[in-house]
Image 1 (cartoon, one colour):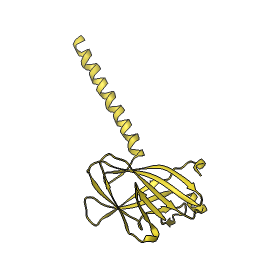
Image 2: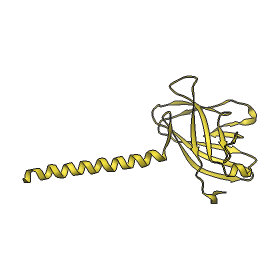
Image 3: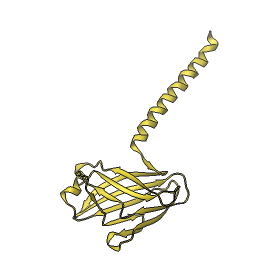
Image 4: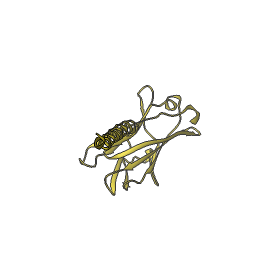
Length: 162
């Protein structure tokens, strides 16, 4: 009977490891926003003067390097009444596209596992913009040329950031 004890302990250890891993992966999946192998994270929502600034991060996981083509006129801020507002400027690292330049796309080369800052600015800041719910980013699919994908980022912002 003693020869079964190590196997029984090993069995319980493996089961407990699998249960812990499953619980961790479920909680992790609910926090991550991954679309087309790019993870998007909200860093902050702040205001400067009459401008609302939304800082995000994008991280590419599979391709090195990977072309990222953001549709400037398709990306928007959605307020609490589900009205969309275009951004005045979108910046990825040092690449800036201003809305008044009428440039349709922001092109950027993402490197694998290197986070890239995305800064979205919109002004003038109104009461509707302060209580915005989501950011919608539209970018081209890596796999299917000509297809664009949407990523919706919830703005769970603390009130003290204004």
